[in-house]
Length: 126
Image (cartoon, rainbow, N blue to C red):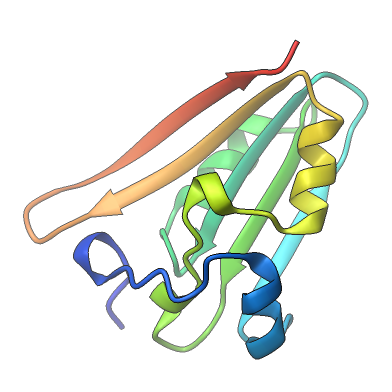
């Protein structure tokens, strides 16, 4: 099973509404969210088999102190179709979690034939 990273991303959907009309939660994708009191949200909008390892890194950073959100690809293969570009990612639970945070830390991954790496972005909303 090849992860859907790098040049394999297809961005089949521009918005979550389009994705949720064709893909099935619990079968094609999963959403895990844990909201805690506090200003920090750690998220991985391309978790699971979309950008492998990013959900686990985000969950570890969040620990027991910060809020956590991930959208995970759980298909047997072809999870690249679940990739929504970050600036277009509008899954409603994610939007609500971001609205409740002052600082958002977002974990992203990338892999190609030679190298793989993780990127972390921070948005301060105050």
